[in-house]
Each structure stands twice: as structure tokens, then as C-alpha cells.
Image 1 (tube, rainbow, N blue to C red):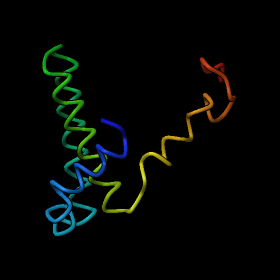
Image 2: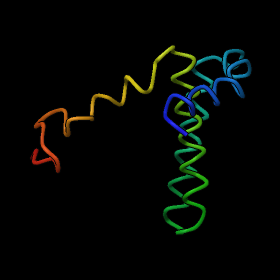
Image 3: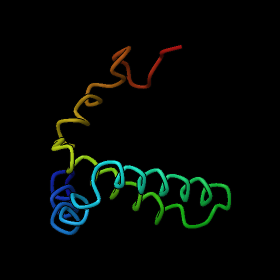
Image 4: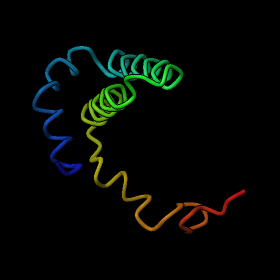
Length: 91
């Protein structure tokens, strides 16, 4: 699945609920999922599932804000946006 396909899938599944919850509520859910990811990392269990949940909530936030994630991630297509290198050589 491409980035755009994933964003559309999340939009199709959740946009109605996300819009009614609003940006603050949806962003709060993203933060909660990041906390769950932190616990999964510490326990070394369930990391893939929690990363997927974080991605879904991040894309929900993007959908509410009308941000095209394909365009957003293009910031990194040529390497580090600051130094332009791969790998990054910034201090």
C-alpha cells in the first residue's frame, strides 16, 4: 500500500469519527498511542502493532488538517533537510 493509499484508507474508515472528535481529541489519541508505543518498546513486545496504531492516528490528524502526507514526507526524499546528506551529518 502506498502512502496515499494508506491515507485514503484511514480517511475512509475514520474521517467521520475524527471530524466529530475534532483535532484536539484526535491529536490526544495520537499522543496516547505514542505512550503505548513507549511501553511496548520498554517491554520489547507489541511494537509492530503500536507503530501501526501511531501511524493510523498520525494520518487521522493529517486528514483532519487536510495535509497530503505524500507531499509532507517529500521533505526527506533527498536526505536530511538540514544538511542534505544520507546519512545525516548534522551535529
